[in-house]
Image (cartoon, rainbow, N blue to C red; front, side, top):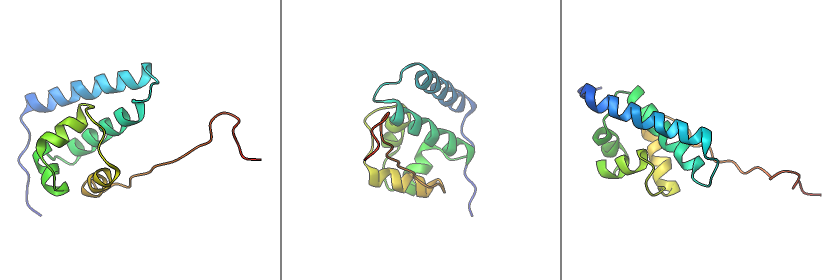
Length: 107
């Protein structure tokens, strides 16, 4: 396995601040975007934990660095096949779950 250069400290700190803002949003805004915001935060956290830059992850996924940056800052939600490739590149499982809403269990 090859080594990946460390990210500049300023860049990593900026990402951590964005992640904190996403976490705050998740805790205070239960709107339609909460799921995507959570996924975006998890992608960024896992990428950082693995020591990957956005460019590194983009190469592994077969996309561009700007697409990874857009995902991490909560831009347009990616397609499910893109999320599957990201999960694979981050050595994760992508779990999608449907749950009945309050009291809407079938008969």
